Every structure is written in C-alpha cells, then in structure tokens.
Image (cartoon, rainbow, N blue to C red):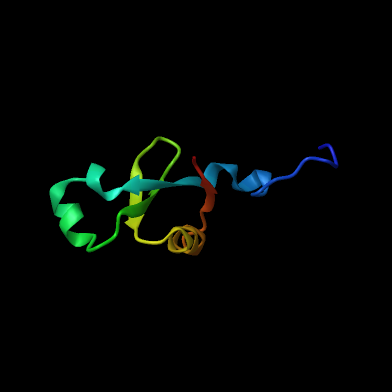
Length: 77
C-alpha cells in the first residue's frame, strides 16, 4: 500500500460498503411521499447490488444507521 493512499474505510470493510444518496421525495411512490411529511429530500442507503436498504430523512442519520449495522457508508453524488 502506498503511504499516500487515503481510505474512507479500511480495505477489509470493502465488502460492507453501502452507498448513501439523496432522493427527491417527488420521485418516490405516493405512499412514501405521504410519510415524508414536508421533506423535499430523503436519503437512501443502498448495498453494492443497488438494493435499497433504508430510506431516512437525514444524511447524518443514514451514516449512523449504516455504522450501527457494521456497514461502511460512502456518499454517491
């Protein structure tokens, strides 16, 4: 490993990476929109296969949720 390499997660956690991305509430099914209240954006947590694991109101909450489940969250733009 090059000493200049920077990891947001340790290499051994690579299998546990999940992706956090913002989702416009307007793009979600109507029943989810109703539950979103006045939020315009929610944050989705996805596994490497693209399966949505969670949908939360706050980006920080998405990261906490992932870490509490021994997952390594990264942001998707």
